[in-house]
Length: 111
Length: 110
Image (cartoon, chains in turn orange, yellow):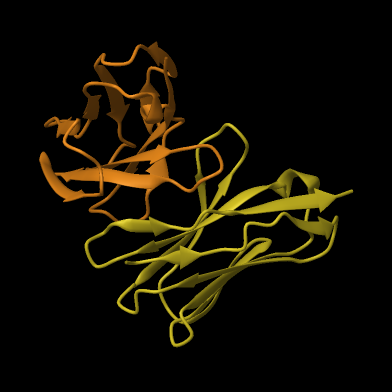
């Protein structure tokens, strides 16, 4: 039974560029949540997708957008990258928003 | 503002002893409580969840919840060096959003 997968593992981008991160949920899960985690801090909630709709959103600007596909996989898009966007981006899947299981994360570095 | 508070540590515990990690939360409407373990450079791993007042045991781990005091704790018995990690407390609000503490760094000394 495959767990949550994310791609890519690492990414280096330049300020002003755009990035797309991908997530495939654990088998049987229908909900995907995205988090940003800076070094030494807890994860910060970006948004959650359920039934292809954004169900909840944290305190992140509109530069952060997402999508969920019919197979429950999801993408996180970040436009106009800033140096402060450098972080570990985590995807978590769950069944209807209950216990959340994390993927390995994508380490984004903005230079 | 919904908040989850944890002592940042580090908490140093001798091998074989009991490690006690604590968490308080501000939202009285919270229903679900989670403990995650995170090794340096890795993603969080769910190790315990608890929904009702009282204790919940799973192997060497026990989660304790007291909703009246807005307090949740994690006990690790027979601590091992491999338990050295950052432990994150997360509280789920009525909108399924997880509110996270900043984590407690636990060090198990051989």
